[in-house]
Image (cartoon, rainbow, N blue to C red; front, side, top):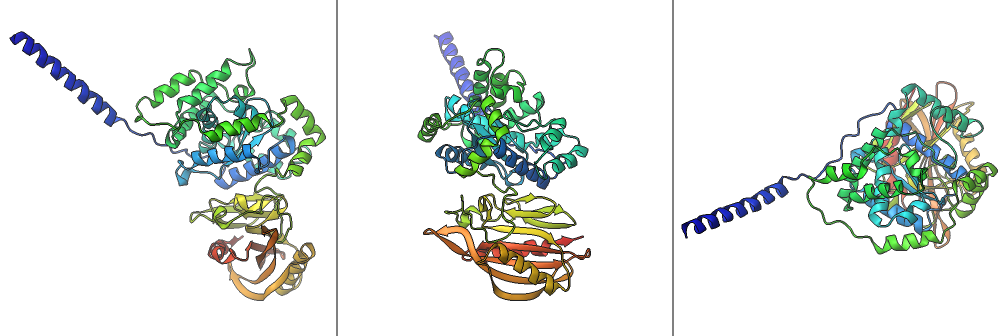
Length: 486
């Protein structure tokens, strides 16, 4: 009897230890944190500029669904859900677009733009698998892989070649290791980059409530398809090896999580995607040569956000994509970053984007620009000047009015001190691309004209619908106060 009691006591102690051990193991698990991405030879502003200009080339060479497409809207909603878990100081102005291509692929551009093929949406068995592909691409941007791979001295050439994206730009960039055409438009990634994107992507998925294993399982699924060639995704994203095992090992010490199930929205989006025409890589390559996709994208309203197509004045009447725009979609961040170019620098909200060329720069929220239209933001440009600053200001107003017959002076020019020089500030009134009830809203355009030592002048046009201008005025004033002219 005593031996039985002793055996029972030992068994009880053993079971208690097991329970305590399991509890200790569970409580010792630590939720993963996104790593410090480090720095690249390209500045943050340069990466965004490169991404926006390269995205504009994608819209010329590939059929892209407009943002109004239900498939694109779903992908953008899923992307926003993933983006919310990224710390503000490390986040980027991510964009999510869908290409009408049947091949399974996705690619990311520096600074934020991400493109997902219809074929990828159709191939995903669950929302988590699609989220995994998108999180993987977001991780490439987060870790600045493209910007880190090119030598510093090459970036000036790359940005220069992208300045117009015409003529021989594609050939120049191809020589630098950037692929153009129907397949991809990005820097080639190394296996180490891919492993890192898997790791960081898994953390993004986990924090957003998606099972990270779904990402690795999707990639493993692709490896079994297509015989010896495999999907395009695998040729652009070299397999670092043992993806499933690596992800499982990474998440083994993370606290248990109740992951999101596949949503009805995903099932509907995939059903919608099957009803959209999808082209092969060869068809897309042939169409790019004839300019078919550029024309098709214009007709459908698929236009790159923040591209150089944004108007250089405040009164363009093309309201595509801007009809239902609200202030909440363009609200500026309190955190500012700096843009430098052509002898001047200026600070602007970090959730806005800067894009342009050597002659003109547009700084605006991504949602605040459409094809040939800018509803919110600032245009900065240089102009030849003769005579006094008043003469230069008067000439600029006349030039703006020629392109916008409805533009008028709302408040007479006033003297203003900016960057240590005396200039002129004039409030103009016109029609905004933003519509309400089918009619354009009233717009305010704050023109600031400043003399430069070269004899030319620098002018800035701060733009917003009349109702929203008072809310943006402090941000615009802060931007103006930060202006430095060299």
